[in-house]
Image (cartoon, rainbow, N blue to C red; front, top):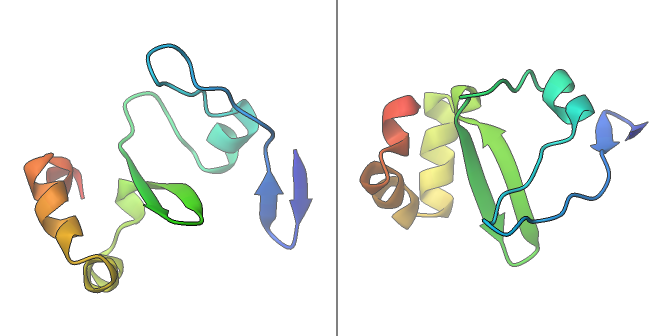
Amino acid sequence: MQESDGKFIFGVVKVGDKGQIVIPRDARKIYDIKPGDALLLLGDQKGMALVKTEMCSTGWWGISTRLWPQGKAYLTESRLLQSI
């Protein structure tokens, strides 16, 4: 793991046959990710990011739905909204 100014490089992960990845141990420890935690996968043309849904406050939710208007409908349909 490399750190610079609060930003981390945890290494490379591979996608398995079922489309799954393993989040590196150091990342799980730093971000307190435990089995069963819900993660929101965000993306744009530059890449992807994972965010714990408990980090999604009302203010963040309002900003994110303005940036991606379809996001609220998508999350509601996929039932992720219930965990936010």
